[in-house]
Amino acid sequence: MLHFPQWKLILVIGIVVAGIVFALPNVFPRATMENMPSWLPHKQVHLGLDLQGGAHLLYQLDENEMTEDWLGTIRDDVRETLRKNRIPYIDLMQNVAERTVSVKIREGGDFDKAYSELRKLSVPVGGTLGGFSGAHNFDVDQSGDNGIVLKVTEAGLTQRMNSAIQASIETIRRRVDAFGTTEPSIQRQGRNRVLVQVPGISDVERLKKLIGETGKLEFKLVDPSANAAQLAESKQVPPDDDLLYSTSTPPVPYAIKKETLVSGESLVDAQPSFDQRTGEPVVTFRFDATGAKRFGKVTQENVGLPFAIVLDGKVISAPVIREPILGGSGQISGRFNVQEANDLAVLLRSGALPAKLTVIEERTVGASLGADSIAAGKKAALLGLMLVVLFMFAAYGLFGLFANIALLINIALIFGVLSLIGSTLTLPGIAGIVLTMGIAVDANVLINERIREEIRAGKSPFASVEAGYTRAMSTIVDSNVTTLLSTLVLFWLGSGPVRGFAVTLSIGILASMFTAVTVTRLMVVYWMRWARPAMVPI
Image (cartoon, rainbow, N blue to C red; front, side, top):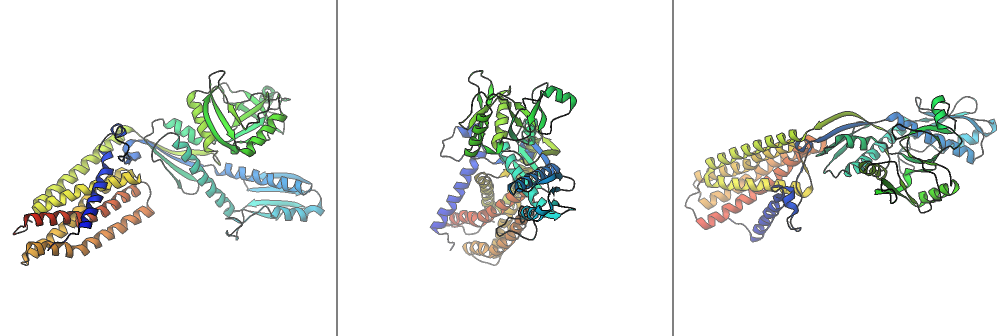
C-alpha cells in the first residue's frame, strides 16, 4: 500500500506554496507590485547586464601613482623620524623608477643611530602580530658615505597593491550604489584591474566620471605673497608652493601652499544642499572629532587669508576665512548645478581612491539588445517547455500530466529561490533553466519506466507504483548529485556568465529532485487512493 505521512504532506504543500508566493512578483510589473500589500513578497529577480543593458567597464589602477604616493609617505616618515631624534640630514629624495627613498646623514657619528631608527620603520608583510615575518615592506641598506636607502620590496608592493585594489572596490561600490542601481558586479581581475558591470544604467558617461575621479580632498592655504598669473606665465613656482588651476571655465591659476592642513580622510559626511543666501547648490560637509579640532585651529590662525579647497589637484573654491569655523562643519560652493553638487557629495562620502583608475575596456549594452535577449530567452524557454510537456503527456498519459505539473512547480521554485536570495538572472542563467526542464522530467522518465517494468512482471498497480519510486530513487539521486557537483565546481571556479549558469542549474537540480520524487509521488498516491484503478494508465 502506498504510504505518504501527514507531516510530509504538510511540508511538501508548504514548500510548494512558499515557492509560488515568492515567484509571483516576477509575473507582475514592478509598478503593480508596489501597490500590493506590504506583507506580500515584493522582491523580483534582478536582470543581468546582458538582459537589461548597462555598462561594462574594466579599470586599471595606476601602479606608478600608488608607488609614488607610498614613497612620499615613507619620505615623510623618514623626515619625521630624523627630526624627532635630532639627526641632521641632507639630500632626502625619492625615486619612483627604482622604488627607493634615499637620505644622507650629515654627521658620521649619527649614522648608526639613524640607521637603527629608520630600520624600525620597516615592518613585516602581513603585519607585526602573527603575520608573515620573512619579508618586509621595504629594505633599509647603507649607500656610500653616510647614505641610507629604503627600497620597496616586491612583497611589500604586492601587499600594497592588494590593499589598494580592495579599497578601490569598496569605494567604487559606494559610488555606484548612489545611482540606485541593483546588483552591480564589481570584482578584481589580475594584479591591478577592477571589472565594473552595472546593469540598467542609462548615463554611462556620468558613471565613468564619478568612478574615475580619485576624490582626494585637501584644504590648503593660498600663498598671499605670490602672483599666480605671473607664475603661470614664468613657470617659476616657489619651492613651497604648487601652481593649481580652478575647475571653472576658463581655469584660474592659484599659488597654493604645498602643506595640506586638513585632508578629506577626516570627513564623516557630505550632503548636497542649497546656500541660504544665494540659493545656489552647495555641498555641506562634517569632520570627525580630530578633523574638526584641526580645521578649527587652522581657520582660527588664518582669519583674513584665502583658504583653498582642492579636489584631485584642482581648486574648487578659494574663499577668504572671515571668522574661525569651530563647529567642525562647513560648505563647499563652486557654481555647481544640482547634479554636480550631488556627484561631489557622493565622491566625498565614498572616500578617495588610493590611486587613479583608467578605463582600458568599455562596452555598453543597449536596452534594446537586452530586450531582444529576453525575448529570445523567453522563446527558447517556452519552446523547450512545450516540447517537454507534449512528450511527457504523449509518452506516459496521466503520469506524464503529473510530471508536467511538477515541472511547472519546479520552475516556480527556481524563480522563488532566485527572488529570495536576490540573485541576478543572466542569459546563461536562462539557459540553465531550460536545461533544468530536461533534467527535471528525466527523473520522472526513470520512475515511469521502472513502473512499466514492474507491471510487465505481473505486480499489482499499487505494488508497481511503490516499487517504481523506491527502486528508481538511488539512480535519480546518483545522477543528480554528480550533476550538482559539476555545477558547484563551475560556480567555484567560474565568474560572470558561468556563475549565472551554475546558480540557476544548481537550484533547478535541487528543485527537480524535490518535485520529481516528492511532489509527483504525492499526486500519484492521492489519485490512486481516490480512483482505485485496476490498471495503471502509463
